[in-house]
Image (cartoon, rainbow, N blue to C red):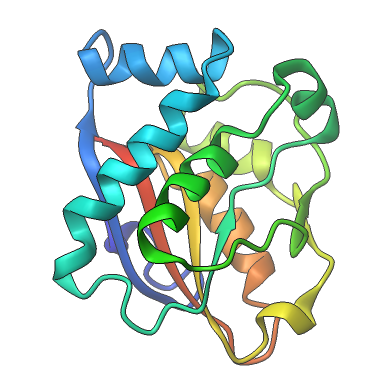
Length: 178
């Protein structure tokens, strides 16, 4: 998965718990978490993912978790940030702190579920703003998201996070599309 991000921002490592396939049991869980008010699914999956990779050294040197931010409007509609819930599950296992207010999602033009790679890139261009660079300068952060498809959202957010001096970034998601 890290190859998606090579040359886009300073990526240390990247992993996903599973390959995401539409209509699979995993996709139904993600759908329930995001659209049917089931934040506990995100926490549980975060715990499972962290347990699965804990012994691999993936978390070695990571200083903090940064959940992929969502817009205030989306937060109000959903009631929670699914990436935050996944991060909380990871924290249960790793004890890593969660930094929520480092980067802010400034815009959300439309859902990207039916967009091409290029449309996704355009949709998230300039969508994030680094607001607390001092929290992550010189640190290794773990950017957490639910599903990585083309990587456009992670790239956009990663580029913004990379504006902090000396930051190192790793990426962890529940799913990665094939």
